[in-house]
Image 1: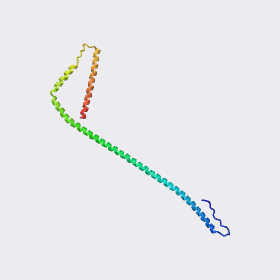
Image 2: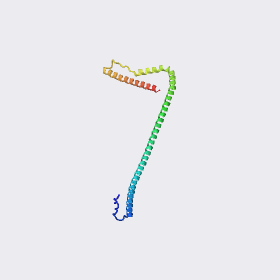
Image 3: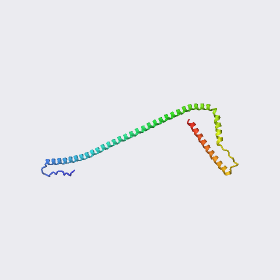
Image 4: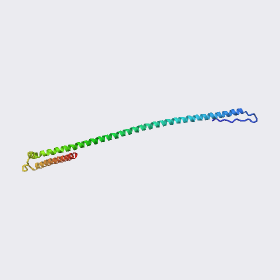
Length: 185
């Protein structure tokens, strides 16, 4: 506000009330203009703040909407993964049940077949044993220890031991395989 000087009243002269009134009106008008300027400046600042607040509110609203959309998409993907996993497990379980049922039916039918084969094979077992003995007799060679020297006998013993070890390991492997097959059936 500009510095205003109050009107001086002259001593003993005639007082001009119009002049005083005019000066007071000018002073009031000047104060009013400064108040109006201050009001418009503050109003402009407040409007700018309101606009900035509205923009922030709108940006937050759009951010929240985007976050909500992303969360909804993730939840939808998670639900679809869960549903796919559940369906896959159910399919696998049904497939396993079907395989087990097929194995049981196969065992039931095949077991009857094996029993029939065993009944028919009763007369042949003796001939199979005889064939086996004949084959072993042909393969087996007799060793004459009197003719062989000590090193040759040691080498032959090592060779026979290795052959026996191999046969035992094959026998063990076949027994384990048979146990697994029985367990699977």
